[in-house]
Image 1 (cartoon, rainbow, N blue to C red):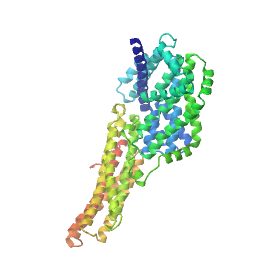
Image 2: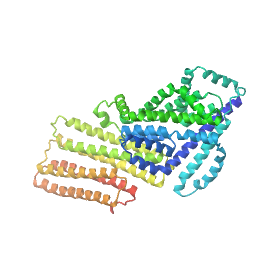
Image 3: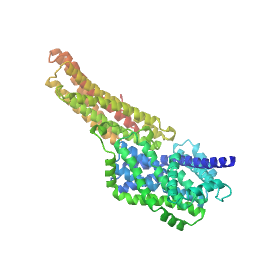
Image 4: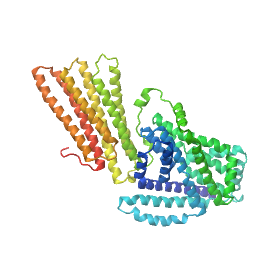
Amino acid sequence: MSDTILLVLSLLGGIALGLYGMKVMSQGLLQLSGSRVRATLRNLSQHRFPCFGVGAEVTVLVQSSAATTLMAVTSVNAGLMTLPQSVAMIMGANVGTTLTPWMVALLGYAFPAGFLAIPLIVFALPFTYSSRIKSKPWSSILMGASMMLYGFCTFVQMMPANDGVTYPEIAEALSLLASAGFWSVLLFLVIGIATTMLFQSSVATITLAMAACATGWVPFVMAAALVIGDNVGTTLIPLIAARKTNVQARRAAFAHLFFNLVGLVWALALIYPMSHWISGIVGGQATGLAFGVALCHTCFNLVTALLTIGFLSYFCVMLRKFFPVHNDDDEEFHLSFIEGGVQSAAELSVDQARKETVQFGLRCQRMLDLTDQFVHMPKTDANYNHLFSRIEKYEKITDRLELEIDRYLNNLDKSQLSPRALARVRSIFQMADELESLADACYKVARSVVRRHEVNVEFIDMQQQNINQMLALTHQSMDLMMQLLRKNDLTAADMNRAYNQEDQVNGLRNQFRDQNIGNVQSGSYTYQSGVLYMEIVSGCEKICDYIINVVEALATQNDIPARDGE
């Protein structure tokens, strides 16, 4: 009994070490190829086949379909990718992940590479202790590859063959489970789903299916059922990640589930002829059966992609019907920020957070538009209270946005970030803080309008014209900020434009302030009217101060110094 327990723990330990090694290697690959991945996603095409190819390419680069799927979900959640783009990318990720089982079969069975694990550590040590930042990803790649090889090869070597003598109870139980025909197929399908959910990795289930089939514990058709269940089980991670996201992200996450359910239907219908066909190709030897499991996994994902990609537009229509927008406010006021649980890899998470600041800026821009409407709206207007309520709601949303972005960045694994990425994190922290302050300034302007109406103060034409002029300049500054936020690289010329805009706002504020003192003294309007008038003017100037702070924080990512005296 103790020997059996020790064997089970050793097998589980081998899988666990292999999975951890894959995670470490994936992080290193992502650090090394992060800029390429970001550039690929940034230039994503609107057509389905290029998006499909990007999903496959990114999955091969980072060796994780879960990471690619999470990228798609978070990008849709932040409005950075359309639903058809994300669905095509998820389909590509499912095909890209088929490379991993072939690697396991090749290095675990055809050419057992466990003997390379220790030498890889020797090669990794110089990179580990190197002071050069660029060497760190290679350390993660080599160390991760070493642990992956040692773990999976240990599992393969320690998996006992089914000789009917060593573990007769287990052999008899598995034989009984596999003897119920199609019901056994369904049972092993459920086991595959459960195993993938337990390990949170498709590779673990596929490795188990390979070992169980290659050593004779289960027939090939049952290993195929495990593979089918494995593909359905992989949908759990994005489904969990999308629970608190917006409607578009939930549609993208469920697209992953629907995609695999389509595969489930055709694969179950053809599981016996498909298993017979693959068995005839690979033969009955252990190595051949391991490659047969990998081929089964490839067939499932590739055929499912071919069956569904032509119906992508209809697929998206179906998703919209399943997950409708119930009312206008659902999309307008639903937060599109990145949830803390939707992180995939540190380098790409920084890029997602950087893009999220664009969405934050759009909220602030919309809030300024509402504030402008409110400044010009008479108290007798039927929408007066509703509009002020919307401005208050936006102010609360921006508070939550800042908190969520800060929480998201604080949860990043800083040890996996390059110095440039760390600088970007500090910049995003500052931008989120300044954008939240910008929204507060808009709300204060709206509060000044409310106080004006409470004391029944009317502005003369000159005051109203000056306020309009100040608001126009504020909108120009906001438009410039959004333009620069969307740019990947700022230049000194961009900063000069921003500073010139700020100088114009400051000069106009000073001019109006000096005029206001004279107008109050001459009796053109009351002191109370002058105070409320300057509150609105100064509030607009304060908004522009926060705008230039956002632009300066953005400039630090491009090593552009702030203007002297700022």
